[in-house]
Length: 130
Length: 143
Image 1 (cartoon, rainbow over the protein chains, first blue to last red):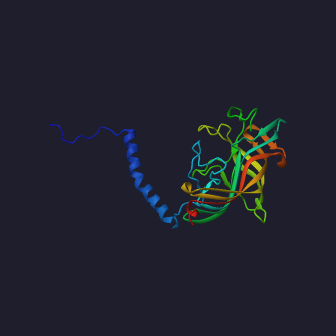
Image 2: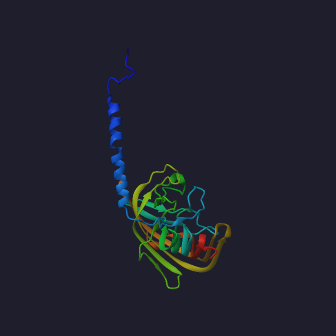
Image 3: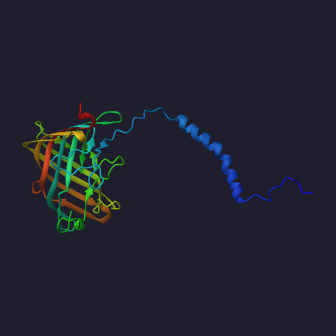
């Protein structure tokens, strides 16, 4: 009569690797818990970098072309000084001596200096759009 | 920069900071002392040195490659005195100021391709549109 209990004839290498991984899992979890417990308590108010303006230009960027009646700055939740300018033209020289013009209607610069809102409170800074 | 007439097909270099992960578009902080504003607020000079930018001539193509580059520039401007006010309540912004005249000189370097370029002096450049003033937007618009 055959035994009702069938033992597997052998363990494959895959079975051994699976068993090993399961065996060390509790150690890994304990190590992660230990590391978390050692972290200092901290605030979690978000970063202090400025928010972009919500409006998208025709290329899908958080940007508006410089021009009359358009949003002049690039930072949202902002109050302060702003300069916006575009359509620069000029010429320069490269390291091979070639004269190369720069500028186009879309060549714009701008700076913003003042108060902006980030990390749930007032921040202050000066930024430039290049 | 363009080789030949100004057209996308002729653009050989385009320098700007990367777009931030937040979406903030081509904006970098200005170090203390880099921006000088006159007492009456009517003129300014911004001098930025060795700004980390990328050279991305095929922008705005989504697959446009950017090469690391540096840029040093001086941007100077002065109010013309002509008043300007732009406001869009639907977008929560208001700008109050004047038109301005601005000029730019710059130099760039792209080490990976051995390229550098320097513009002629500041007073040789021209600018088609400029404004200087005060802006409020977002949460500050209604306050």
